Length: 253
Image 1 (cartoon, one colour):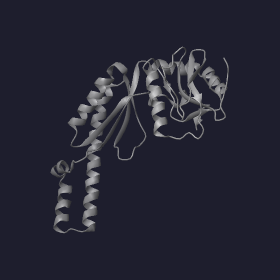
Image 2 (cartoon, helix red, strand yellow):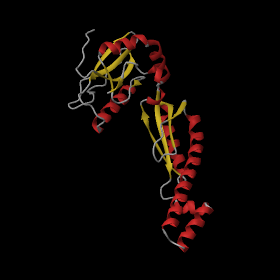
Image 3 (tube, rainbow, N blue to C red):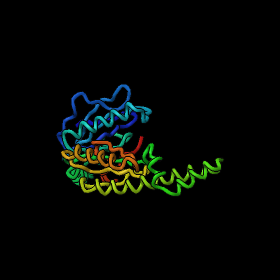
Image 4 (tube, one colour):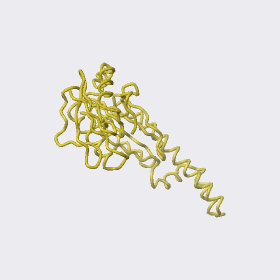
């Protein structure tokens, strides 16, 4: 196998089982789009390209990265890399595949036939009427602000409304989580997202992904006066690849 490298290093998209074909007409990140290639060792292969110079998280490149991983996942399990992962050269990728073959293969086995679905829960929009009907403290503060309008009264009312909306949404989010968890193989919390009271990713059998999304949407309808539910997927299984399973020789560009 020949080994090459660009001056910028090699961009790593994913690790796959050996002999997995690239999707037809698939291209990589960059402008013009980078030409993809596959390098392998033993049971595993990595999908790479030359790393574009001065790569940034532009929308077109994020979509190209995501589209490739999604198309690869249609044909088998994928150990996906986050956007912007660059190795020094092909030799370092090959060395990592060799050193971690057993662990990567086990991760691919665990992800086989599964996808990730992310669910975010936010405070409900246009829920003030329902909130006022349920929350006596908000009703009291609103009445006071109407009797004696002023800056401080408005601030107190606004803070009370924001806090109550968040608490209602958080409580709904926990109930939604309890409903969704049994329908998934696993779930993990994601990073905090401004405005969200819940950011959870679920590992779901691909064959059950439509049913899972339908359940999430139905819960959004059931809790619409308390929370806004935003399910997204199917996605590559980013959240279910442990730190130990990511190539140690690969880092952000």
